[in-house]
Length: 75
Image (cartoon, rainbow, N blue to C red; front, side, top):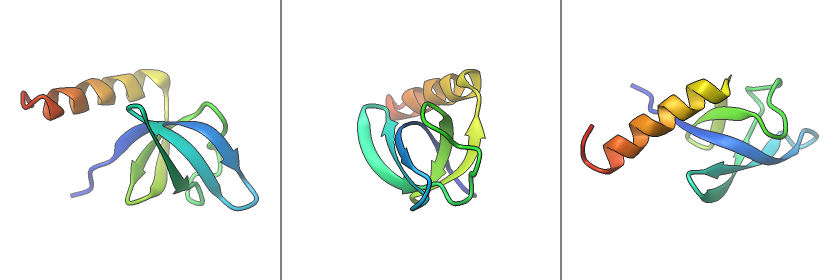
């Protein structure tokens, strides 16, 4: 099973297929090679340092709520 975390792209370099993302307040660098539609401001699902899917704002927010419940020990 794969667990993916929602993150917002805050900087992107399409030439190197890399992006900086904000994951619940933490900035990380990931690969966007598998998500050519990803752009600055896009929400992506991230697994193992790789953006694996571009998602809508609504999908990202719903996923963040679930992650917050899990992290609080209620999920």
